[in-house]
Length: 146
Image (spheres, rainbow, N blue to C red):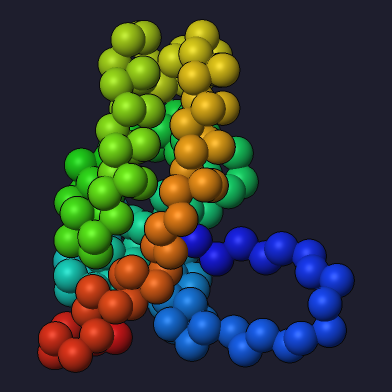
């Protein structure tokens, strides 16, 4: 994850070029229809699904991610998380999905299991998995883009 943190030190940190490439690619795909996403190559599909997960969670949490699409992208996102080597994030998303299965909809689950979703949101933030970097690394030097 690429979260900015305020720092009082005067040391300049160079931005990670993998992050810039990831986010530029993701932003170029905003607004694609599901049928267009399915037609993307593996790298761009991974960027789309991982970027969407990260954006939704950072904006409103896992409950928002699941309720906005009613979980339509969960299976594809879990496959991408496995492919890039993000097992903690995959486990957190799986647990959030199970919460959704206990209610009539993901929106209802978000309303009724708010504290559990908040805990999972914290775990997501604290997972230590650099999703943008992992996605970039998974496809670097493989002929699939980078």
